Amino acid sequence: MNIKPASTLPLVGIYGLGIMGGTMAKALLDHGYKVCGFDVDAKAKNRFKKYGGQFLAHASDVAARADILIVSVATSKALEQVTQAIVDGQHNRKVKTPPIVIETSTLTMADKNLCAKALKRVGISALDCPISGTAVRMQDRAWTIFASGSKVAYKSVLPVLEVFTDNVPYVGVFGNGTKLKFSANHLVAIYNVAYAESVALARKMGVDPREVLKLFGNSPVLGTGVMRLRMGMMVERKYSPPTMKVEVWQKDMEVIGQMAKSVDCPTPMFQTAASIYTAAMAQGLSQEDTASTAEVFAKMAGMD
Image (cartoon, helix red, strand yellow):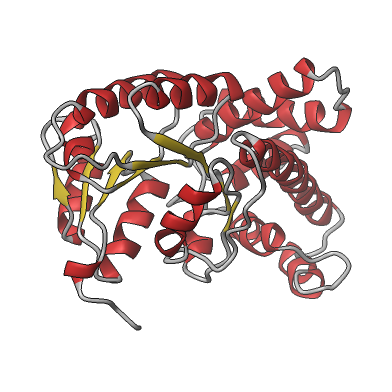
């Protein structure tokens, strides 16, 4: 691993130290970066501190100190609060150069635009950089980060983003990143449910679903990364620790559904898939991995 001296690297601040934010924090620390951060969750805080990160007591302190800010939050309200903290922190910065904000959350375009406009008013440039891939996939450098916004800002933060993956395409104006992430998650949502249904069908036919995964997982026609990751959990019926919680994914599904409705695009396959995630929530699987949709089909097929 080629690690530069910490003194030559920008200080990175992270808002949201959960599954994704925590994974990014650890990767940056492992590459020699100094990282400060904030999260309201005590477990996330303690995990971050164990990694060697500097946890700050006030959200605005992160923005006051860091050169680059990464935002990874789950709700519109959280993004609104983080945006205000960054604005407040700007007033207390010891250096005149404002930070660059890398917004990675999967939220609505309205949320993203409100954030960018509020930051622009105080001279802060924001990039829309949602991530396609789970925390586990980053270990294989399999993330794709759809970077959109100012190309100057993009070039400035690219070395930080390349800590996580080599796949960091610049996709144009602010917001294009989120639109591409919606397209990616739209496909993943359908794939995941299709694999869950396939596992149920295999079991009902008396076929070991492990054989389905073994034969088709690496197929150039049928195999996908989603299949290898999620079907691997489905065949073992083990969904913890989650790579993506059903509860969080449900929020992502709602956001994609809103976008499709806003552009008047019918999505019958997506809507059918969405109903399965809703059923998973109703079965008490909110904190499990989205692979637990297999349990919805197991129940429907009388195998629970």
